[in-house]
Length: 321
Ligand code: ASP
Image (cartoon, rainbow, N blue to C red):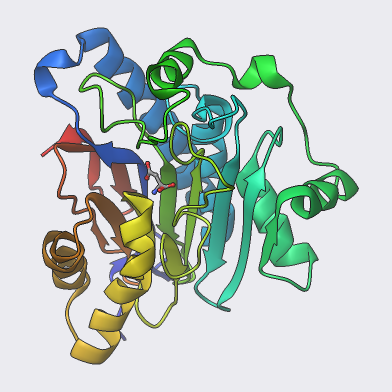
């Protein structure tokens, strides 16, 4: 029998693992203070450990990615949930999606305001509705009907995000929260996990781009673009310049290279991030996992907040290359 590890009772235990990201982008090493670096790494570690523990206790990959992303949403350090960037009108419009690789069920929300945890709402869309994607007022009505927690403007206000917005407010410009000021915080968040039953899942959540308008929606809530999971191939969560991730159908592209070209997980993700995405002008990174619990986290930017932990003992928390 193909068994990676045996537990003390000689039962075959599948390798389980989890990876998370807090955004990819321009971040010059010299501009990161040791205090900031510690804060980011500790926020990543908390989300990673909680997700891992859930898997260790026999939880599903869907539960693990939702939990990890929810914790990252609750941290003001990342551009999702509490730390979401400001839109052109000074509001926070959030997008999130989740996908279960064992069933291909998926749930997504976009354009939601005031919802404390968009990822939990996306999970409820997946599990408690007949639909995949709810947007705007309808998504918020669904949230109220399912007793989701709402927070007021003060909860979502963050001085650094506010200052980023002030710099381009009133212009037609919009930006990734990490692309203009080299010392800016950045950080759409995401998680991928493989549970003890060999099922994989992916989740992604974002506040999108600073000063966005016209109801702009990025790749994060789009199944196939910013998020995808299929037990047959891999689970992927993306971060970067959303418009290019949509055009390149980036998350699904990784899965396609595995399925149709029979590339390994690492080779497929690398080809997409270092070649196919760059070729169309996009930048960013992905985290990807397969049902063997293998993980890869390539990015073509200066850095990507990322962390991973596997039952084979491997653990990583990193920002730069
Ligand atoms: N991909 C996100 C978006 O375009 C932004 C990011 O990853 O930081 O909305």
